[in-house]
Image 1 (tube, helix red, strand yellow):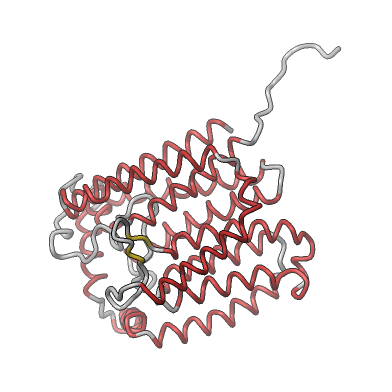
Image 2 (cartoon, one colour):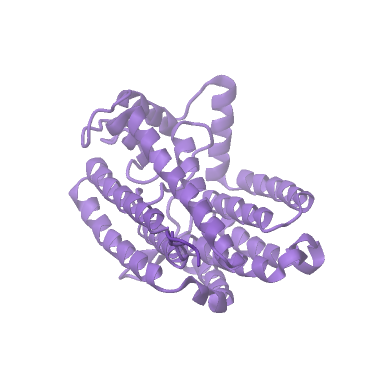
Length: 358
């Protein structure tokens, strides 16, 4: 198990370092220096989370949820409007995005609730309704910021955890269908999300690719099989919007090519597979669900970000874990990885004994 934990740590550090170089390549020294202190804070969070026994979170999960709800409400009231959305709280010293923290807090609390309910999770009234209550509150508060992409991650992760935890597929299918209809309606209400959806539909029907996606595909195509080399991205220079954040996968593809993007996606898949192994070997159900939820959140975020870059899904603001610029995102992902590492460290490796039985 120690080998798996070391692998997780190595992959995380490698992705963060790679992301820092890509941000420097895409946006220059000033943005890189701004990102650097966030990397230091992220690694500090990772170390602290890897040391604190994960079982301690069980006693504070409801407090975490109350804090998350209050922060999300404060965001709606006090956060400034930036590009049509109010997602960041500015405390002068630091600016952070509460929705990123709410994702992790919800995973912790869902793991607690599902473990507590046990077989009752199959019963809608006596079990399933309790985690659904918190999922609904968090996802709606994030959705009306508006932040459709993060609410999607919340719903994907939450319902997958419920399914793994034993909830009935018929219950979940009905809820997902209703939520999908409601979410689609809300997406068409907000101008910026509506324009993205309509642009995506138009590209599928008529082949009219929007500016962002067009520049993203040009970047990926320019990279070819092996890429142009680190620091040689051309599209990030005035052509590609948000090259250090929403479309950093395209910069990655341009500089490291098709092979490089496959290796990075394989790295995220490796994190997920190790997370599954840790969940399987963990003795308590809370630890199992927490390990699964964290690893699933990371891999689904990574693959959705990549899907945006190649035009499979509409453009969203999903960051690429550990790589994209964004203080709250990289800090929360590193803390999440620290928790996953701590779960892995709690597992006792069985030692092989050689000798005759007495």
